[in-house]
Image (cartoon, rainbow, N blue to C red; front, side, top):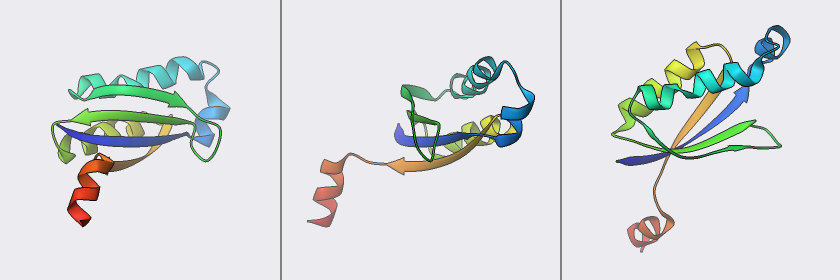
Length: 94
């Protein structure tokens, strides 16, 4: 499985129109399981992004599907990065 980090921001429109924002966010995050992705951790942050998820997916196509499904919910905007362990990166660059 490939590893990914997904950075998510709460959509400004969702902040204005959803009093049950916590429930809506949780529902959006169900897209990971629905697409067979394995979440390692989800963090709330203080900064540019509101939520970070570290997850594994079978491939990049699955990661794209998760991101698309989450964004389609209209609550979270996503940015997804493929990642590899630093040790693997170090070996690649010599």
